[in-house]
Length: 414
Ligand SMILES: [Zn+2]
Ligand SMILES: [Zn+2]
Image 1 (cartoon, rainbow, N blue to C red):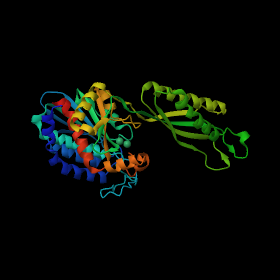
Image 2: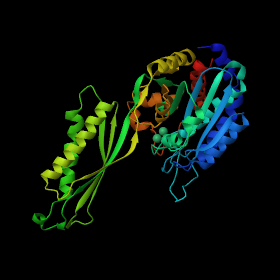
Image 3: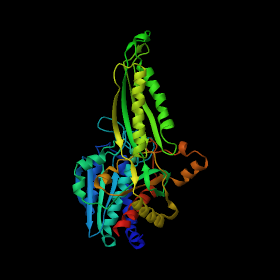
Image 4: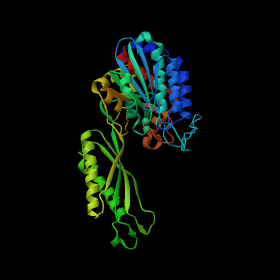
């Protein structure tokens, strides 16, 4: 790592921090749902324009791209997601969400995307203010709709590819329920691939007192749920990892009416394409076989949705990022455990043919985290992403996220 450049660029963090903290509090108080990030996008665009970026708005809907060309050298793409979730905030923070969506749904930055936006904006300002310390092109991508798995694809459909041209490396980060001040990445699969599936199974409706006249889809669906537990337990090799959750099972309206169909909604997480194919094929085979066993009068219907790609960190890029992190953060840098969450970030570098690294930063007050750890109560006491109580501490979270982007970016731009 070039310490001189990192020190010089981050030397201005004291000047950037006050507006970053204000920007963050304002953004946290004004979250917007996926594809509705209009206020956020406008504020991001204004900041980028002020600091001298070439700004491109409405990329894939509400997406924003800021480009800063600063001489010859590599092109580094950094991405932050902007959307919030339909969650009623319970943090009690003075800057808690005050917003509802157009239809009245409560909205909250419960996944920390406000942290990502603020850190990337800070990074764009810092690099713009020290042009003599680096050379190359910085592409800052502010992406809509990560939570609905289609924001990255929307930006690609919105000509992101032709806009950015050849990109040498892509970087992204996520705030996680780890101690604030920590940063970690890992080579290879770091986030899972995700698939959601809606399945309709058919029966024959009848009076609840006359089961002989029915094909009961409630019993059929119950058998499917039980049998699906064998997919991970009996079909996935012990060294491989998969999660299969039936998150929703709906059938019927009344105690004495046997309904004519049931709807199941499943969620699948895997870390490689082979396991993904095994699990999806296993689900379909079991559902079809159980329908046959119940004498279902009609073939079941399958619909895949909310599909997230695997996030598979490039070994070479990640080793360079890890080395830069270790040099700058010392003990604060580590190896990120494999996460069962999913992301659509990798759709962008995959489409561009660009190697990438994705890392995590902590957002939890370190004392609180250590107390929970000592009590063996991390899972119970530390609110995780998507919880109504998820509340990253302002600092050192924003500093760490900003420093991580600057340090990793300069590993190429210097
Ligand atoms: Zn999320
Ligand atoms: Zn997220």
